[in-house]
Length: 221
Ligand SMILES: C[S@@+](CC[C@H](N)C(=O)[O-])C[C@H]1O[C@@H](n2cnc3c(N)ncnc32)[C@H](O)[C@@H]1O
Image 1 (cartoon, protein in one colour):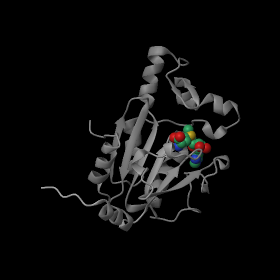
Image 2 (cartoon, protein in one colour; image 1 turned 90 degrees about the vertical axis):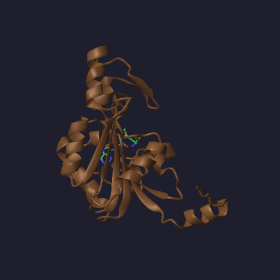
Image 3 (cartoon, rainbow, N blue to C red; image 1 turned 135 degrees about the horizontal axis):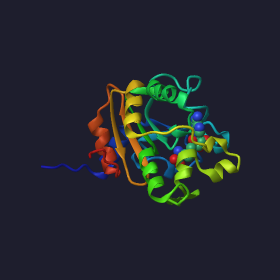
Image 4 (cartoon, rainbow, N blue to C red; image 1 turned 30 degrees about the horizontal axis):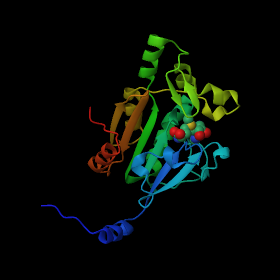
């Protein structure tokens, strides 16, 4: 037996749900398309944009490696990091991931996307360093761009776009556990993307994993 509430009841129920905060680190320029679809219901999620580059007009200007002066402990429900952690110096990566765990509520989660170095290396071995691998909104992308950052942006003087480190699924999973997350899933996807979902100790992974699968990102192998 199934029950369907009326539109009015659904609207009342949605209004009763507390709005949750998603901290978007390394957000880049404003745009809903930069938020993962799982956060697109803006009646449920309030985006807080954070970036080291003031020109992208974030809510908070600081490095993900140290957010202490800006975000209190345990105050965000989710964290979204898309193509950001590879922009950190390697010695700052563990600090940043610990900062992710510090700012999240005990039942929160971090969703992370970055280049999958294993796929990049495979592309280099198959087609070379400078063959176009795909076209992004910023222009053509080669394995060299994926290793060291989008060269055209860096050439224009945007040093924030340089890549300074890299990840495999094994490395990212281990670093997230070391940073204090209780449960981590990683996924090597098409398009040279490496994904990780990292849960705080009191999180309900099933609920979030189901929501991600509905949004097209399944962590089941
Ligand atoms: C490739 S862009 C990604 C933008 C957006 N997340 C997306 O996926 O479209 C990388 C972003 O990370 C920012 N960034 C670089 N180093 C950072 C740091 N240490 N802390 C915070 N943001 C940083 C850059 O300024 C840039 O906006």
